[in-house]
Amino acid sequence: MLTDLISLQELLKRNRSVRRFDETRKIDRSILCELVSLVRFTASGRNAQPLRYHIVNGDVNCNAIFPLLAWAGYFKNWDGPEPGERPVAYLVQCLDTRIGGSNCLCDDGLQLEAITLGATICGLSGCIIKAFNPNAVSLALGLPEYLIPRYVLALGFPKEQVVIEDMDGSDSADFKYYRTPDGVHHVPKRPLEELIVS
Image (cartoon, rainbow, N blue to C red; front, side, top):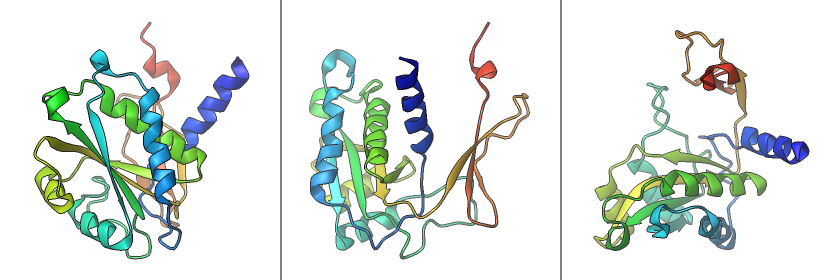
């Protein structure tokens, strides 16, 4: 049992937000469909299962979505990945308002975690993006009015290294991710002792 827990922990450590990709390596649509299929086995509030996924791949479609997204809020002078380092696919998570009204409860995060874990197993990386204009994305994809984009998951083969480091555990500790001059992306994480309320 402990071995399985350690294996899960290692997978979670590898499942990092990546913002620079190898654009020469494409993702077959069948893989994207398999990643979406994972969400069928996640928990769903009321078991309503109101989320849908629009698959975006191919250079033309990806180029239409890319400028509609904002990247890495902590990097004020960075407009996102350069040509050659951009995502090669996107999964646009949409709420079907005919089923879920305006609320999908906790389904969105559960499903995105399942997809990114699956992507990690496949050697892929992703970046879950909330900073975009849903109306602009809907228009670009030609979505019907009842599908409201909630998140955009950028996907590709990673072209950057992401490392986790421990925060010092103080109240004033800086939790912002950052990049060092060598291009390595650093992600501070709070220590276990800070997470458990005694």
